[in-house]
Amino acid sequence: MATSLKFPKDFKFGVATASYQIEGGWNAKGKGESIWDYQTHTFPHKISDKSNGDVSCDSYNKLDEDIKNLKQLKVRMYRFSLSWPRLLPSGFANNINEDGVRYYNELIDKLIANDIEPMVTLYHWDLPQSIENLGGWTSRAIVDYFGDYARICYELFGDRVKNWITINEPYSICEWGYGDGTMAPYYKSMGIGSYASGHNVILSHAAAYNIYNSEFRSKQKGRVGITVETSWLEADSDTKEDHEAANRMIQMYFGWFLHPIIKGDYPPVMRTQVDKKSKEQNFPRSRLPRFSAEEISQIKGTIDFLGLNHYTTFMVKNGSVGQVPSNYNDMEATRYQKSEWKHSAREIFKLVPWGLRKLLVWVKNEYENIEVIITENGYAGLEKETTEDLDRIEYYNLYLKEVLKAIHVDKCNITGYMAWSFMDNFEWSDGYTLRFGMYYIDFKDPKRERKPKKSAFVYQNIIVTKVIDENLLPNTFLH
Image 1 (cartoon, rainbow, N blue to C red):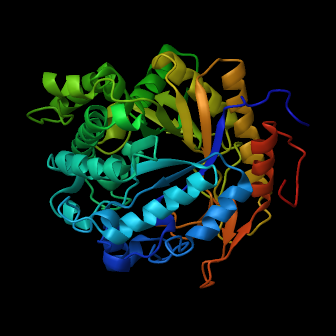
Image 2: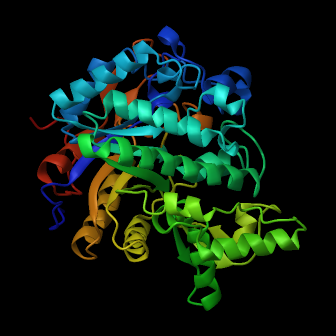
């Protein structure tokens, strides 16, 4: 059955990737070492299948094939990230790698030649190891280094790139990289390192935005946003306590980054909670750093659009849980998922499509209907999955129906949707044990041939027709 609602004519459909996850060429022609290069080579046991991104999808050498497949999908936009150490091998602005410039110029030029708009993320987790050695995102020095890097990217590519994302998923960077230590650089400093790094991520984003604003916007006429991730957090009951717990959790997860960027400072409930908990735990000052008045003026309003990554939903109850100290414990809320919800190969990514609509309405109400581009949304398949990905088709159909309702019924300002992911790739600490792609890749095959899955045919049909037909299972692309 096809839904009667249609996507707007100017709605931008696309697919998303990230440099470390697809490029390979980890040390090709002058590229520097990233934190993921260092960690996967030095501590391979931290990756579930002991793999790495040394070759991955080999997009460094298969650019033309990727362009051909993007054109075949008929996407209007391709979201990809630049590799900081490919462009600046030392991490610093004193040495620009000509081969990195060549590679990204070729990619951008060929996208535009095929009527595909580039959406470029400056930072999608592959920090130069040289900067990590100085403290990475926990060091205040990174604000200047990231600003230098952003300026170079605008200078090199901003004449053609009109949609920039500064940083991808700050919560993941800070909570997983410097909090619970489940991702590179694998530091464990819950409730301390996570907040310290988060503070510098926000300042770095603002620096990159303000550099564009003051030095490039008038000539290049582009836009700068940030991609923030969140699940939907649904109150477990109608009690005041559970509703307040759900609000605390979304403010201290999603609002942690978005509230300062839009409104100038941390959410009031987050400041109250962390200050209170820090005092109870005998810290001499709050574990959540403070912005100065000057910093607040530099941060506030540094966003032209919101990139939103979303995969699943949780139920939330009132009550303090989690390690002390930690962001989770500071929330004084606990989350769980219902057993009857269908799950993907990543068990925590359960199929709860109504959560996306509720989230979009919450963003509309909380942030004055800011323009939203959904920059990631997708389904995790098992490693053994090939091209018969019917569960992924169900996921996209159901989630995109909720996007349609949010646009037409709730009047949310949603202008684009980037499916995760264009093709199977290196899924960080999960290695190659999960598949999110619309194109299948056999990672044991040196050729890394791409094969369209059934979801690619369905997605292309949605892009062309602007309609979701839940009974559609095509075996070929539209011409």
